[in-house]
Image (tube, rainbow, N blue to C red):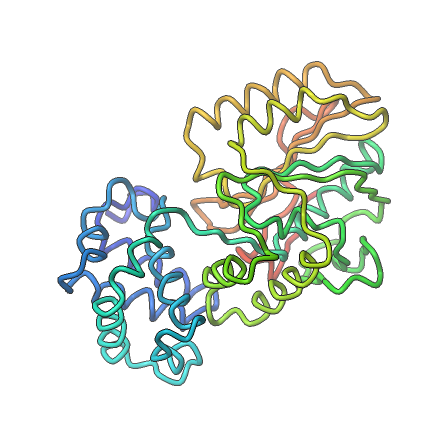
Length: 354
């Protein structure tokens, strides 16, 4: 079992334990304790327990433990059941006591928890855009300063709004100076180049986009944030307020269809067309991954210096569990360049690029 890749863990109990340990190692011990208590849910006579125990597929690849954790957090945030408050605050750490609370919540709110298993987590995190902006700063020196951004798996569009955020990336700055959203992760290594970046257009897509201007949908997105992550919650609150002033341009669409339409649109001269995504590739069907890859390869072969194309991918390395920004661009850089490794929620970023 020790040699088995993490995403291939088939035993549900082992998967829950691994996810809890991962949360603890990522600086979220309170979330880890609640997730570990999902083992106690499996011992209940609930429909949620049966569905968890008989999960079709690999539960970690599907982020099943995080789906349940979000449902529990949502019950707390709505005020329907506040018994996890001392757990989320770090005041109650006894695992047996937490197990009992979680098992009873699952029993009482079985019908409320079940729908949370229907889809993957919507983990929009503005901190992840630090790596994306670092990639744009680097690309500016290769292709020019103007960019048209297109995000797949945009969820609520928190990162689709990245052109409105202020960045301090190890001393390199970007974005409007008076922005309410300040992204300044712990920076490791040298800073990215101080090149100009101008985002001339931006849009995103998602199969089930979340409307941040709708209080109920915004609350649902907040439920996916680990309770320990107070800075993440603050950033999300800021993004919600900014979206209510001017909502991100999102469409409900399949990622492959979105990319196909993106590549078919006329492209402005001197503007680099960018496809980007953050922590969503694992949820795409293999057929969609292949289709997007083939479309980008074909379009890349036709790109020229007047109409460049780039692909920025911030996804999880399943060996190290760091988030890695890899960039491809056409013409001139067909091979992916690994520019950053980062904390899953953007707390730190390590610059590896030139």
